[in-house]
Length: 256
Length: 347
Image (cartoon, rainbow over all chains, first blue to last red; front, top):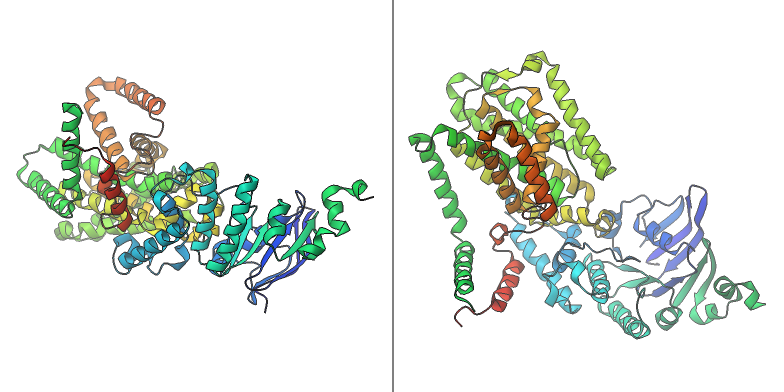
């Protein structure tokens, strides 16, 4: 069974059809890219999967369970985590707290225990703090655990955002333009990094990207969107020479 | 290193050793309580001073609890006086009409607790609009709530209507105020340093991201509003039994404004700041009393100056280490690392 199965997904913003009849399936451990020109509806697809928007039509299933209609935190709890196109860290909070917050769905103590700092509170806090610190040291961020997130350099902020997403314990990781604002050198590093994450945390990854170099380098499969419609789907080599894709990216006249 | 700065560091290290001791808080609490009991039984503090300390305590409870919503959660609630009113009326009705006159002293904590619970139940209702509304619009909701409470109370004759309610005995004593103040500070600090509290902070930082990081934002908002209004109710009950008279006009928007001033004076998202804000504001108002009407000119002027030179309040977004949980593994770790980096005093 596919890990994520999307069928006939359609979303309209007051008449504007942002995504129409989107069909898509991801197998466990796959690394799939979604590409397309600006405004094609890529981020909307992510927002629909994670529950930020409620789909107008269609179904989204994670391991067979329907997700449409669930709240974002309920969806995250079932195993989907994401990063954002423009970094959305909790800027004023420490790096460690950014990661600890992501354990919210896993804590075993009740609000009453938290108010009195009693019962399971101590053990649980110790557990999530240690887990968060372990995760930070894997991402080489433990030295700045006490630093405010906004004080980290841009590259580290991107890395922290991925660490935070992984702290929720996902099966499926959605990366929204992870290479935004990076130079070619950094992009090569990022490619290795993403492949490494997939292996280490055994997660399935879907990523949105503009940088063709990155996408062609690591993705096994691609989906191309344009004006909300799926114009191509398949292996990277097939997509590269697909006339429809070239048309969407480069315009008609060049092709003719 | 100069002599002066060496002396400063010695002092600082001593202070850190003292406050880092795990017996500091228990000893401080017992000493404080004993002092309060002694002060109220032997009256070595005159009644006027005692009353000021009682108001300081009540204001600390109000400020710390409002800071949970306005500072930590980043919303703007102007309805805190409404919760206070509910606590004041529930507690007073119990002591005046329900409890037998003989056992007032024993039953007083129950009355206060009932006032807190009453306010917390209403706080739960106010949390519901906060699911969909934020910022200025939620401020309007809380403003409306405050006005509703006031006009409802004015129109119920059973609680005295606009004339107010009297007949309470003077049950609010310094030891009780100390106890409730310590309890509210402790509980709210505990909440802030738990994952629910981090959830509250993450809502302030970025609500959508917080929801996507598995934080149940509705649950967090309910917890924050219920805890905050519970303690406002407690403060209301104490206030009613310190003044021995309440009427609905005491709990209008101006009272909320007073609490807001203390929150922003002390600094948002800080327990220490809340306490400093409440103490400084209450005591300054008393010190400036001889100035008469000019007090109300000088006080706002000082606030304006403070906001210009310290826009985030005295302790905005900062916390004294004393209020952080000592056993919090990491805080300790980071502290040690910082300590290592601190300049060598002996040199």
